[in-house]
Amino acid sequence: MNDGMRKRWLVTLVVASALAGVQEVGARSGASSDIPRLHKQGTTTQLLVDGKPFVILGGELHNSSASSLAYMEPIWPKMVALHLNTVLAVVSWELLEPQEGKFDFALVDGLLEGARQHNLRLVLLWFGSWKNGVSSYVPGWVKRDVARFPRMQPRPGENVEVLTPLSEANCQADACAFAALMLHLKKVDGRRHTVLMMQVENEVGLLGASRDHSPVAEAAFAKEVPAELIRYFQEHKDDLIPEFKKYWEGTGFKTAGTWTEVFGEEADEAFMAWHMARYLGQIDAAGKAAYPLPMYANAWLVQHEGEKAGQYPSGGPVSRVLDIWRAAAPSIDFLAPDIYLPDFKAICASYTRSGNPLFIPESTAAPERVFYAIGQHEAIGFCPFAIDSLPADHPLKDAYQLLAELMPVIIENQGADRMRGLLQYKQDSEQIDLAGYRLEVSYRKEADSRGYGLVIATGQDEFLVAGSGVGIHFAARTPGPRHTRILAVDEGRFKDARWIPGRRMNGDEDAGGWRLQLPGGPPTIQRITLYRHD
Image (cartoon, rainbow, N blue to C red; front, side, top):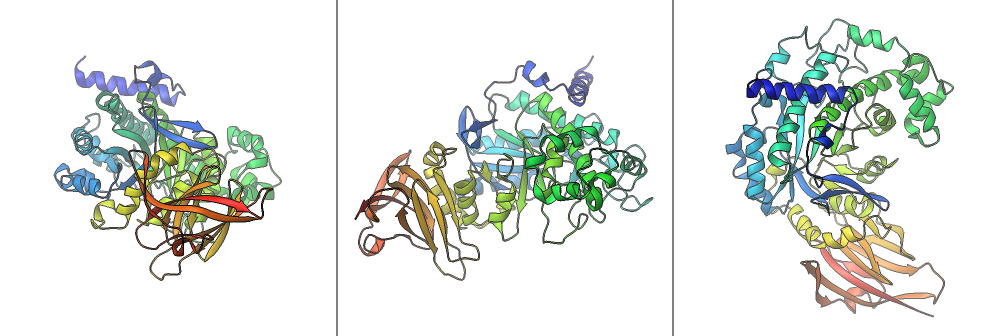
């Protein structure tokens, strides 16, 4: 057996094992025990890298940037200058497997080398069967063979450039390529851990119709809802996400029947979510059987209230159908929102339900968002899209630098209810309870910027506050003397996890001992100590 045949045979074995539900292959195959993994710490989920918690201060490249190593050469130093620790880069099926069964890992190896030379980590985005609801990154040998690799049909008989998730041939071809990629990563990076996580596909779903009407989909839609989905809904009935639970409730919580009988008017989206998730779950399982890195799926969000499935990709992991995704693809570690909409707070909250950890693989490059995501939801990471287009002096640079300094303190306090995020959105003030105090937060009114930050309770009557354009009055909520005043406020920075104090900010800067004040502009850190008296 030559090397090419041996590799193809091994990949086929991995895929067959994964699709049969055998996910122990990777554990038996000698992978290092300290590869990146997710770990529960108190109430939060941490990403462990080389055995230590790691928060991704990242950015996602333009989709085509990583398709050329020469194009990437000037980008790497720019990522370092912006103080990133991780770059999100695309690996496309069409370039990995240009001919069926012949894999080309030159681009992958070049990305690994570029990241290592610049002391950066990678999250790789697998653009396989779908990207933004279209099958634009599949190889030519898949695109040309519609009979072997069938498409979705928004209307019966009308093929579109989107593979159907109900085809076993589509899934096995994709899973084989993804498993080959993961086997290669295990070989070349299994000890170095440059690659931290994998994104499985990208913003999947069907645009232009609420469900697939291809012959195989029509036949499946007429059948009863799978028993395992019904069983999951029954077992989690009390804590299902309410936005979709109401449709099951509207049919009388039926425990058997067709998709329409069980889910009523939302049957189409439920059907698509189940089959998209099943497909991605099998891709994920094939990859993990080869090399079990953490893996996630990302979502193109519902853009406004009243938007219908098909106007956004129907079947994708939008927050309302997360329960269907969990039931269909339990091996996928978490589901992640791509957030370009203004109500960042509400979207983050919708993706931190039922134990789903928050990771933001795409967003606008707004410093206030990363502070809030890490402070309020202890996010695994934050990654603006098109990071390679940002100017060298973008405000994200200062935000990432300060957060990197503060990161040991952030990690130390994760999972212990000692941290909160601050973000101005449609309000000039808000109240937050933390560590026995009520924080009355006010935000600076500036047309071109929002107040933001995070606050950490670091000790008895002691807090660290980092951010910009924020004022905080502290009021004790526990028995004792009535009045709370500021004992001392110090501006400062961290160096090698050690606090370096700067100016003492008592007097005018703390409003005579009543209020901590972070100025606008680049973010700063202040340490505050409180005392109480009658």
